[in-house]
Amino acid sequence: QVQLVESGGGLVQAGGSLRLSCAASGSIFSINHMGWYRQAPGKQRELVAIIFSGGSTNYVDSVKGRFTISRDNAKNAVYLQMNSLKPEDTAVYYCNAQITSSLPGPYNYWGQGTQVTVSS
Image (cartoon, rainbow, N blue to C red; front, side, top):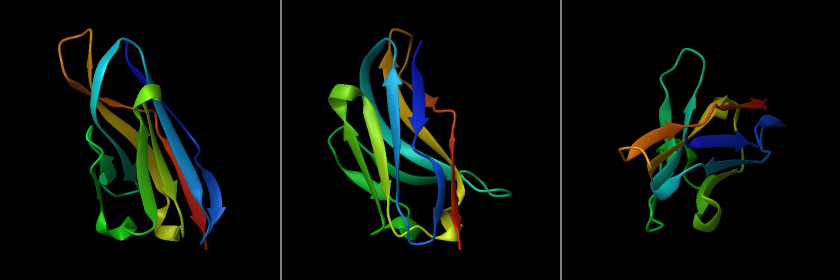
């Protein structure tokens, strides 16, 4: 079984920083793209940032210049460095990865979510 485990959420004041981590474990053959999504109360889940196997990245416009996504292929991990946080960044953040495993795939896996709260 493949699992994604996240860590690093919490409460921070506006202007502060947080770093989210997500590690994939299990019978993993390869990982294609990895990304971070977020869902605020009453809103749809949105893609925040994505990083592809070759290292290219994309960000939602609202976080460009403030967030940085990176990955460590040796650790099957993805990170999200969040700087200059704003109250509107408050949401549950979910890790996502497209993984080829011992099961028929590839398949999109999700982490359990981690709460990020930014106070004004």
